Image 1 (cartoon, helix red, strand yellow):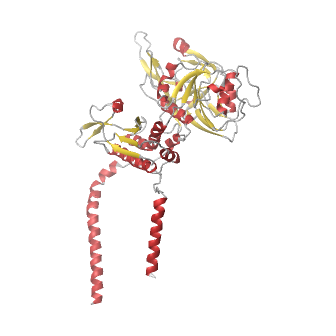
Image 2 (cartoon, helix red, strand yellow):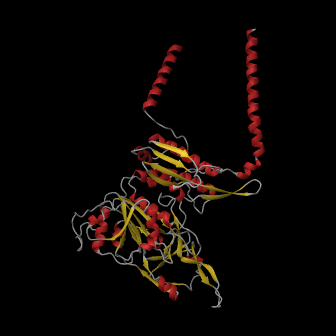
Image 3 (cartoon, one colour):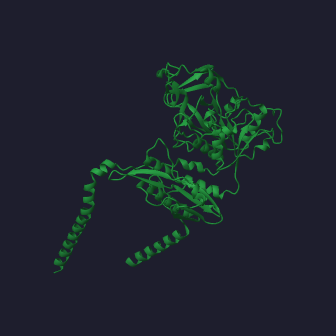
Length: 543
């Protein structure tokens, strides 16, 4: 019986060894699946061709516990990548005077207090350099959100590691660069006012500018179109081309106002009338499931502006006052496009409304006002003298300003005649391929300021000196629109942040140290005593 059991056990062990040799599997037992790669990442890494990918982590040297945790998470993730592709990883800090791609990187300086009260300054290089076949790209490992603590930013950075490395590998593996375009011809923002966004997108795409020609074939090669704050109406021929571009699977980022105003009149006269802005796009957007309402939003959570509170014109006294027409928009934590981003600055924005009951469309909010908002109908007037408002008037909450729509869109020109001015070379499609669109009811979100002829960073406020998340949001938005591999979904990964209670750790330090020293000795002594008693009893019975 024992022999048969032994033979069966050996056979089962041999079978398990053979299965393990031919069938690979891993079992992630963590609650948040932190060691599991998404199917999109596994397919991306498995599909790498050519020479092996070399990854050099610059996170080396005297690291504190937080950055050491970031480095360990990066090396563990790269080990997981190596299971599905040919990837080698090394860790080395930049050497003094090192040339090449390293000299273009900026280190992160951290200040830490030692036990003696002294402050130590350390330079950290939170980057990874990916190399393959003579090509290189840099992957930033650290995400720095001003509204989060240091530990929370490290945890956010660890959450985004898979997306960061997957994005870097995708850029190296890409054989041809996708093209996107800023649309012109309807009073859209000049190139200098979208310079910062264009420069950020140039890392991923070939960025062009141009007007509609009447032939839809001219825009079909573009992965996405960006319509940045138009001021003039769209003709039926233009609408037809955009509609059929969407029907063929094209993606559009709409960033436009719902109202018309004049900043020049406001700065000179102290007031400006506000009326509805008719771009002749409302009917087409309505067909796509969204409506930009002709309202002007105010928000208690807003940017300040300098106001002269002095009665003496010769001795001005400028004090910051809330500018309710410049809301700081909240980002949705449910969408990978806007997840873990800080506030987005805007001025004179309008609200969005979802319309229709289309089962083929999935809609999600990306941007919204705060819990204390107000919506003004137009026509209206903006008056700088009425800068203080009754807070009880702000009784609206979380008015949508930006949204993503994904699915199968119905054509606005289904069962309609083709407009004049269109070069009809293709049949009119009544329904789109699965595709995506993003609509933002504010042209200011996409606009960077220009100072002395030089464009400022997108989302930078000159008065407060604060940098908001406009650029990050819009780059994510375009990546989401042009993302056929669905890598942007990796930004939705969540890891539970388990912080150490420092006060309790200090209070219990002596007890924990004593227990860790004495408890093993105590257990060893008890085990030895039990063993001796059993041994003594056994041999006494034999005697």
